Figure (spheres, one colour):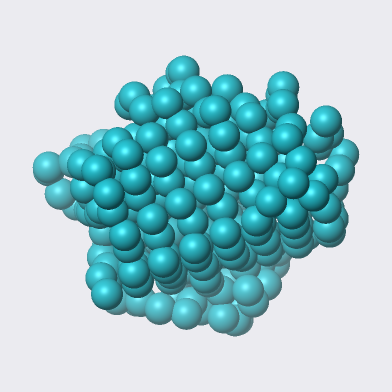
Amino acid sequence: VIAATQLGYGSVVEMPVNGDIRMGTQVVQSVTKDIIINGNNCAINKDRGAFQFNCPTATLVLAADVAYKSTTITVSDASTVSPGDIITLYGTSTANARPEAGWNYQAFDTRKVMKVVGNVIHFDGEANLLYIVATDEVLVWHFVAPKVYIENLHFAGVDDAGTGSGDACIRIQGCTGRFNRLSFYGDRSSSLRPIDMLGCVDFVVEDCRFERGHYGRSIEYSRNILVKNIVGVNYVAHVVVPASWSSDITIDGMVLNNCDAGIDSHPCIRVTYR
């Protein structure tokens, strides 16, 4: 029913009003422009991932160490970077770029670009961690940060066979945007993540409901995320999971009924609970 061509660059997609869709193949879309999906209270039945939105990634070369609390980085060539883009620093060295020994997460820092001067990129906030070029094997991921808006959409009869992020109902990387009035009903075991967010900035998730799933809302190496008015019912293990050195996360309002936990906070920085 839904083809990837419907989710082309700059698209507005109107789902059938109160529709009931059996979705066969996951929509995997590389996005560079804004996308709006108005669900119109449509229900999607899908036995694994439904939508995957990935902003194309370009890898830049880090030219100098990044000090703790630095608001800039220097790369070998910043000519493709513009204000509003997203940059993620990723320390890949398993020997040197693991800031803590409990979860053993690699080092991540995600920031929004404010300005570019030559090959120096200025960000909207300070680096949370230290990055050493000679030892940390640092990747610099560059996303152009399109906006993705999804509202009034319901995922039903979700089976979480399989493992990993590919099983998320909505997986999104390198974007900004907003999710409003979404609901998810799954078959709880260990792999279903209704919303899996990676490397995103300035994102709002509001008025969403999660029922029978492992994680409700997974937030990985993202920044400035607002999660508001969330409901978790009937065997959701962890409704909101900030992880992988995400920072500046606000969780504002949550109702739980028969869940293991509302918030499972993995290594992350500046998480506010209201």
